[in-house]
Length: 292
Image (cartoon, rainbow, N blue to C red; front, side, top):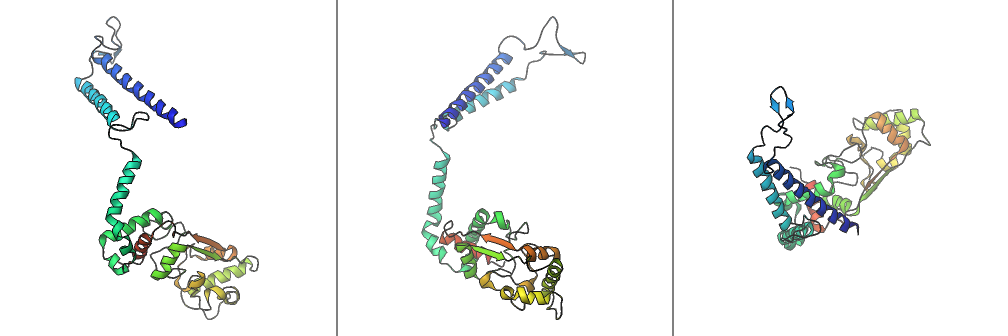
C-alpha cells in the first residue's frame, strides 16, 4: 500500500539521519584525528589559518547530543517513526475528538437555548459574539472579507444599510439558510451603447436627486421599472437593489454600471442550512445585525 511504503521510507530516512549525526559527532570529537588536517601539507588560508587547527567547541557536541536524546525520546512518545503510534498514543484525530467533546460540554446543553435567544441578549454577551465572529471567519470571510465589508467588486458589503433581499433579522436568516441567486438581465440586444450610456448616467443621478428630465429616463421606464420601481428604490422580493442609495456590489462608476446594463450580472449566495446548525445561524444573524 502507498501509505505503508511512505511510512517505511520515513523510518529509513529517520534512522539514516540519526546514524549520520552520531557518526559526524564521533568523527569530529573522538576519532583521535583532526578532520581535514594534514601535518605535512596543511591547507592554509590568509597566511595563518590552517584547516583542522582547532576542533569545534565542546558545547557543540553537548548540543548535538541533547538533540539526539530529545529526538529518541520524541520518537518513543509520539507517532513520528513510521507507522508506530508512540507511547502516548497521540493522534490528530484523537486531539480533534477531545476538542469536540470539550466544545460539546461548553455549548452542548446551551445550543437550543442560544438558538432561541433574543438577538440583543446575544449581542450583549461577549463570549457568544466572539463565537459568532469565529463562525463568520470560517464560513463567510472568504467571500465577504474579515470585516464583512465585501471585496473584489463581486461580494456585497454586509455592513451597510443596503441588503438586496432585506436587512431584517428574518430576511438575513433566510439568506443564510436558503441562499440567494441574484440575476440582472443584460440589455445589449435592445440597447445601443449611446442609450446604455444615458441609462447608466440616469442610474447614477437617481442616487443624487430624482432628475426631472433626462435622456436616459425613457429607457429606464421601459426596461428597469418592473424590478427597480419607478422611483428606483428596488424590490426586496426580487433582490432588485435600491438604486437611490448609490451602493453597488460590482462598482458604481458610470462605465461599470453601463457594462452591467449591457451584459447583466449573476450572483449566487450558497445555502448554509445544511452546513450550520440553528445556534450558529442565530449567532451569525446577531453578529451581522450588531450596530456597535
